[in-house]
Length: 478
Image 1 (tube, rainbow, N blue to C red):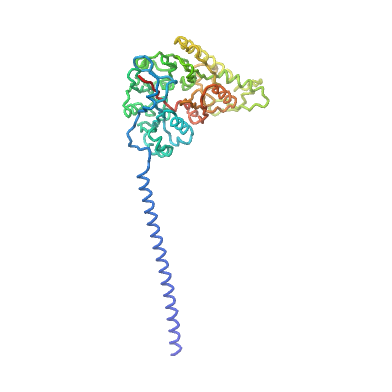
Image 2 (image 1 turned 30 degrees about the vertical axis):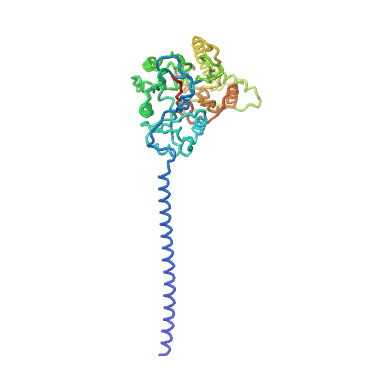
């Protein structure tokens, strides 16, 4: 009996010890759970405060609901007087820039062009306004990208405009800008773009900025195999009195321009090009010290100069190999362009040399036509210098005879003639062929310009150039 009592006491002690251990363990677990719940609550409160802070302070500079301001009095005050004409005129490149219209595409800040243009505009004296045209459904994405690039000083010079368009990247082509030289009123010329890819952008700008809207011509673009001849890249003012257009523009669109614009129109041959715009072949370089009616020189795309440079380079034993591709569709073969000047009989040599020699003849006829038109303007216009820029072209499809309208030619490299000029900054794409790139740099060295070579491959891939992605409103005082 005594032994049984002793065993019961031992069992009681073990049970008591086990209960104490379980109690401590339970207390510890409850404490851990409490701490975790507490930390989780703190995290939730922190995230909530962060979200509230974000909603309160972001976007800091750009607001989707902010009323668009399209005025820029700083530029208006220093602008030269408007030409002595009655009615609308398209101002040439030697007038100051009032506003830059630029199309938005997702990740626009990754190309480098947008930041470069923005920096040049905001550092200009006076500052140039920038309006970014945003496709439908992409406003928040655009704000997220653009807002961090601004500060308290520059915020009033950058605006975002939501448009009802699917795309806005080809800003140059959707509309043309004209100013009434007597009143200073700005007019947006609506150009017949296809479907919703930019079709309603001119109306959106006109309504937002209270500008006049000149309606587009009645063209059924669905029946036009190449409607691009009616776009803004095919309209480029040379002087106060002379505007360059391509010979592929629809007669009814040309008639709208003739009726609305008080300037002469000079047609040049662009039918052999795939896109077919005058800004692929000619660009104005202002030379302020020249003064007079024509304070500028002209750059022009020259396949002849390209071939000349390649032939010279082929005699250099240390020359960089210039590879080119011959063929159409999936049948592409690589060959060296330099070998074409050393007796190579590769079919790519025949097509490249034949085609570009023919293209040079067509461009030469354009240059003669422009020279004659400038001489007729009088003053110093007959003294305008024409500078050749090496640009090599290739036909879009194989031809039995090259140099015809059927070639639908495109540039091999991104086209430096299709450039952007903002103040004393010129932006142009770097050419892949180093011999072309260096020659272009040398030609521009004579001008007091800050030359900026940028990546133009993203627009070149779609058949355009960097000039196509911007539309510049210029200013004069009535």
